[in-house]
Image 1 (cartoon, rainbow, N blue to C red):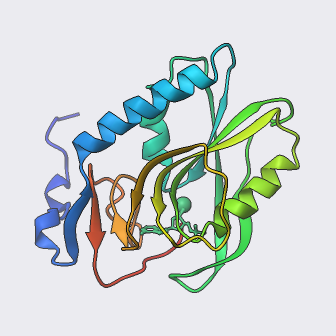
Image 2 (spheres, protein in one colour; image 1 turned 60 degrees about the vertical axis):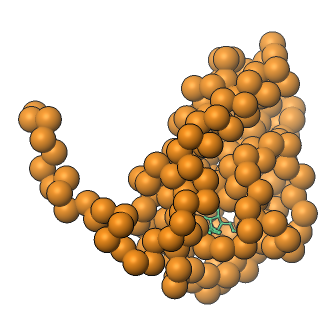
Length: 195
Ligand code: IMP
Ligand code: MG
């Protein structure tokens, strides 16, 4: 394989998209905060082997980076949910599209979420996971949109509290794009989808 990536030039430079706005959370701020969260989880779960549950797809970059800051024998698993509703608003009715492989019975489970907006998706997930009898169940959310929650999920760890604007990057998408941005930016003019 050559080191010159075929097709790399077709990646749109963020500066070429007028809808991409200001940086809300910089790469440096993300790196700093993830190290803090990882250290906190390492302390809180000392002597245990927590199971990190990534909610696909938005939390995949967050979980990958966070897990490397946790100095414990963590395990990783993934689940995907799809919410019914319009393109921009979650209804709270959630369908599991991909379930976990690992049995949660007796495990210390940490749900890793990208962003809590209405909180409805997380609320449904937590009820579903609690019914599987984990030893403990906690949530680590990278972002919390302030003042938007219809239900108040109990969040053990929150990376950043942000204002109610639509954002993309670091896992968050608009129509599946921009998940690979290294920072988190505003995006004007679309609510995107809820995956
Ligand atoms: P909730 O059920 O309203 O809390 O919706 C949470 C889900 O909606 C998140 O896991 C994201 O997938 C998606 N979401 C909410 N706000 C944004 C945003 O600003 N950008 C991208 N996705 C978002
Ligand atoms: Mg999500």
